[in-house]
Length: 200
Image (cartoon, rainbow, N blue to C red):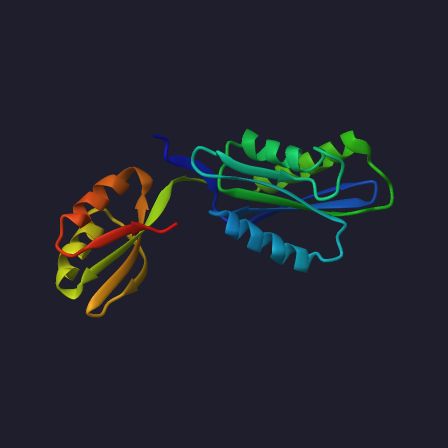
């Protein structure tokens, strides 16, 4: 099972200008459709006066979840060229939004395809590419008495603690490499009074 993928380390920006139209490309690392929605909403507020906010994204190590949106431009003239750039860079967990300010001169479909493609490529060319592996989050509930054993496993597997709450009843949210999830879950469940569930 492939669980590694390449993504961008931090947000980047690109720009393309043609016949007075300005295409501002913004690339972001994203990990869920919820994050995509929040990012799009923020950009619509920031660039509220732009004519179009076209975008594409891919999610997951296998790149199986993706979407391209033309946001009012002619069909397949914006979202697909953006998606094409993400794919040709072999990236995942990436959102690229191209914000267009119309300059008064129509570019035609081939002009638009070129503009969206070039702007997206510019943003991605500025990015630092990093290799990551796919993770899942596990919710772990246990009694205070099990704390040492649970924390020993956290250390052994080098798990990242996303949330923690320690009282009589303890609660952790752990980020686990997908490949290790069955092992980690089995080891945790071997302990007394420990329950594990995946955070969906």
